[in-house]
Amino acid sequence: MAQARARKAAKAKLPTIYLWQGTNRQGRKIKGEMVGENVNEVRNELRRQSITPTKVRKKPKDLFAARKPPIKSSDIALFSRMLATMMSSGVPLMQSIEIIGQGHENQSMQEMLLAIKADVESGTSLAESLGKYPLHFDDLYVSLIHAGEQSGTLETLLNEIATYQEKTEALKAKIKKALVYPAAIIVVAFIVTAILMIFVIPQFEELFQGFGADLPALTKLVITISQVFQEIWWLIFGVLIGSVTGFMAMKKRSRKLQHLLDRTLLKLPVVGNILHKGAIARFARTFAVMFKAGVPMVEAMTSVAGATGNIVFSEATLIMRDDVSTGTQLNKSMQETTLFPNIVIQMVAIGEESGSLDAMLAKVADFYEREVDDAVDNMTALLEPLIMAFLGVVIGTLVIAMYLPIFKLGAVI
Image 1 (tube, rainbow, N blue to C red):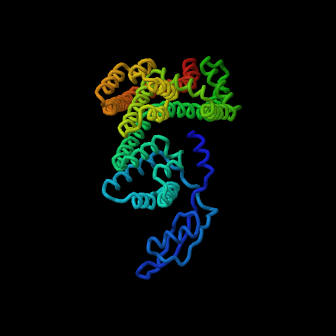
Image 2: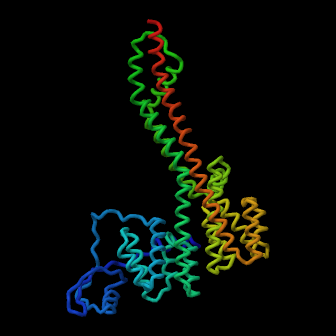
Image 3: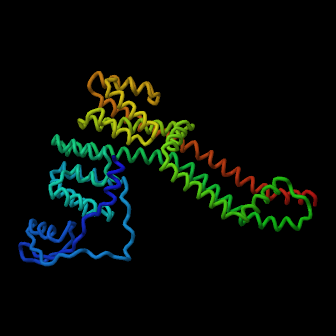
């Protein structure tokens, strides 16, 4: 359903931007830009603002303009926090969205917010307006906004959403660091090795040709590898880049591959532990926010499944949802998945018995977010000497291989 909405929203065109000129109540000439469906809508909106329009036209497209920047999840998190802060300070919703939209540095974000403002002003609810942009406002976000509008607690829920997104972004950054840091070092090591093989080793090879003696086995091996690099370096780099690109494309299309990869990552030493704790933290944080907002448990678990960041946890959450819908206690269903530690299951059981499930889940999320922070810091501290040792072995082996013939020659002389 979410994918269908995303495709439908992608096909829909954003309201057009119009340039306008007019006079205000004091008779002073003013001008500006406004988002609208047509010229008449813009004129009517200007009149509502006590501006007499004299000229309204579509903003021409700049064929040489730079490509619009994408809207990132951090932009949405910042918008949520600013909207929550402004509304808590007594600024009306429409004015808050307009101020945030006009002051945002990201042009794409600016246009989207002004379009949302125009949509809400036409009578559409905020939740429905946000739901037209599912790539940026997911079902979880829209459900919470809808619950806030229905219960009259929009300001409170906006604060909850902002806090949730900030913690989620921080957790994502930590997990990304755990995955990207080792991969980046391996890539750098490969590039450095390739440069030595293609440009440095051939210089030594020319030098060794004048020795007239057999070279050590290690030197011969390195020279052979260097010759292969020189002849088909383009093929080696092409295969590596193509393999990574193809794998990422297959991962997006194949659910089986996603399941295999996510399950394999969870079993990896160190990194798997971090990803496991991160998935539990996301599960607990999302569930706590949804449950606190008054969303029914079964409905909340549908959104929680998409927020865990791991397909293994996502599928387990959907199974738990089906169990809960038939009357099974949540802690019993969690126990059957074998994904949750005993301490988490016990805290959920206490929350269910005492009627404070959201508070218990929030404590679980806080605990595991700290665990992820500590685990990533410890892994980084452990990896730094190991990486230095790895690079030392790789570069040292190449250096030794090149200087062995020189040492051999010196011993003979």
